[in-house]
Image 1 (cartoon, helix red, strand yellow):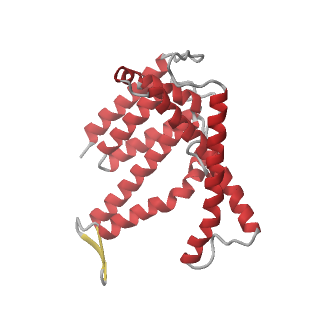
Image 2 (spheres, rainbow, N blue to C red):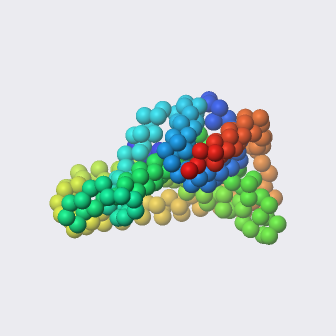
Image 3 (cartoon, rainbow, N blue to C red):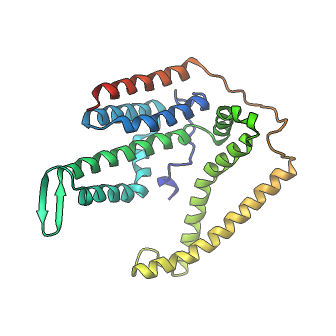
Length: 265
């Protein structure tokens, strides 16, 4: 399960993407999420796909690793595609069998939405794959720093988000261990009726919740023992430095945005 999990993991590397400032990565990802919705035809989605694959290539993270990590959510992508195909009634009729009617616009929108979904997953996953949780915390805190003037708990929010990302792989690993232990005791997770499958999840959820609460309590105790009292008066060991590579990355996104606007139907 861990080999198939990409979101929340960090893969050490020495690439251009790994050495970028976490602030520029966060700005890049948020801007990318916005410009994805500019695409509305084959050319614009093609531009985004090529751009995303190029970023993955520059990051030196294996594309096969991304594709393997996509398997757990592939059913969600297929479900979205099927919904669009069978329930979108726009365009001309392509196929008709009884009550089943498939329209051209349903196929088109289904493919585009699925591609958009995949591109967003790839790039947001790349953020955590190439950025350590600590760097991500520093980047989020630096970007939200102006909100401190209105007494917004910026440091605490950044810490919570970082811890959440950090413990996603840990929870997945814990889930895998519990599943193997339950399967050794005769619990079947992939066979039987739907009702039996749902019932079999209960022996998995209860120990997982107990383990999660125990881990959270241990983390809180460790932080308290080390004198953690929030962001007030804290100094920084890691200094964030904005370099030319960060500006270059954002300029490339501006160029892609211009191309999308030009080729937008």
